[in-house]
Length: 135
Image (cartoon, rainbow, N blue to C red; front, side, top):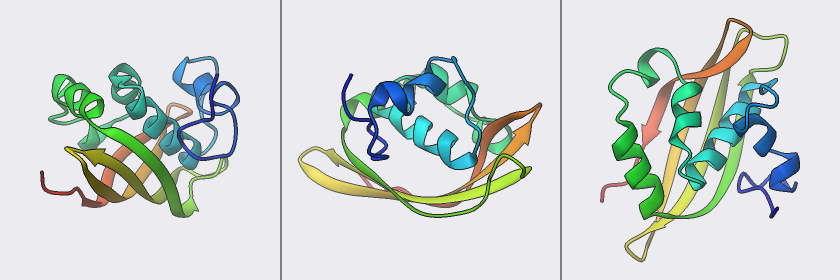
């Protein structure tokens, strides 16, 4: 397989694929966030849905998410910072910038995401800051 879309300088098969395929669970909030980004680049909305809880899961429209994920060209992910979110933590925050192209225009999605451990598994719970570009 190719380079992982999450820009972790690893092959997809050695980075995010084991999480997306369900072989192993992410041990950190950052691993979950990176694997969710990679899942979006593959329009794997089932993984996106399976890894969110709380406010993030409310009003989530899988069909709309899949259409959006398939309509953009993913250009890269930059993790700006992480706070907590290690294996020994119950919560964590990851700030990131995702770049993509839509209708020949470059856009950036800047988000500060909050994650929690629920039943020994990391979940994306909500965006504390979410700046999505206008279409």
